[in-house]
Length: 601
Image 1 (cartoon, rainbow, N blue to C red):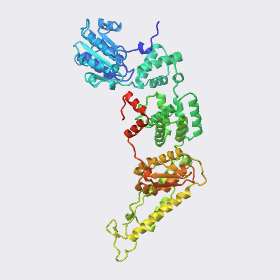
Image 2 (image 1 turned 30 degrees about the vertical axis):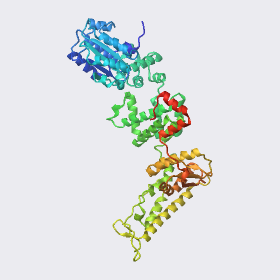
Image 3 (image 1 turned 180 degrees about the vertical axis):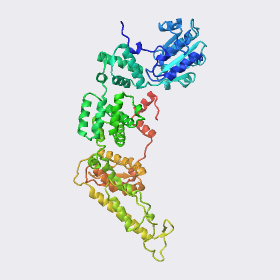
Image 4 (image 1 turned 180 degrees about the horizontal axis):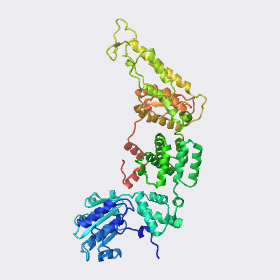
């Protein structure tokens, strides 16, 4: 007896046997029963969900001479028998993927002129209709809009967005959904029972998840695993055959991370990758596992898990042990790894760092202080952020108490948030103005501030800035003398500008367009083109120097900023000007553009 794959052998022959598309099949049965049929239907959806199958069942039902009361074909009349034996002259199938030219469509249009010899309708099923060429679509338009009364078109496609809007507007649209895991598992159970195969429900769940919502894919995987397991579908044999990572690994990773066992996590990762599994898939699978654990925390969301009953119980047990904060942080870290994975040049190191960070989420702050390098990044610009809250000079308090508080706040450890500096009283002159001396400014409530006191306030600000620079000088590690290159300087400069965005959005954007250069090693110089920017950068020059010294690991760096000379200022060229300059230097570029008919975007 000739072997037939399950996807063909168990292909539905009636609407009731179609899996997972109840709403659509009910609509089609009602249309057959009432006789209210459109002249064109568009079946769209992902692969393997029953589009072509439903088109064939529908074509047979509308030509059935004795349809049942609920709209199904009788399978006994001549039309149904002819269709089942694949000799019907009223139903035509066209594969648009291989017959997508205007000539093919014209031949199809010629057949629409001949009425059916038996039956009521001529049905044309065009599969993968999005593959038709534009000319073929245009040739099809008129006939599709006003076909003969005995012609019905059924178009099927997996890519609805590629079909012309003028075609879509002439059809009734039926959107097929991906099949759920329980629906696929239920159908696989029926197939396994009819074939006499033994199975474990968890094994069928793995097949259903691997199929990604397509029944045809599920049946193909089912046949493959049956051949491997000799008709005994067990969980172990299915994951071995499909090379699927066992969910036990994810349960174990979560448990080890909760216990902060970093070494055991690394050993488990090495074992998993030694079996040929991709690190990116491992992190994505761990994120999906954490999502399931989160859903299992609430009994109302527990049914959302498309897993077996035993697996659902394991998720519920692990959810009791997992804090919400741990799961949220795990998902955030895994998502960051997924974003950076494709661009990483050392993917395994990225996965290892991700799992190490996950395994240390629940550690105490004292034990985990050394694992977060970004804390040091915040220290380098914490004083900058505090300084950005200073009000203009005429409104700065000149009292010694306020100055001491600001100085103490700047010297606090980085882990303590910087308090916001706010004057506790209206800003007034600390001493009465000299008799006869005119007041140059007024305070917030109209009270005068003398020039003498304003000078005192400015001197206080400059004094605090000098103290801050002195502290930063003391923090530099003079013992570090690592050799660095111009490329490293540019890299750390850009990284520093990105970290400054929150505190100095405008200044950091302008600094990104500048590049410092090594003049007399290890001294670094920055050339700016206007005095305003020069003053702004000079205001935080000591912090920039401290940052570069820290990340370049050289405490002897000297950072200078100067205004560009007249011959150093260059015009910033537009894309058009850059291209014209390139064409002048190399005419072959312009000839290539003309040959390829390219335009500058």
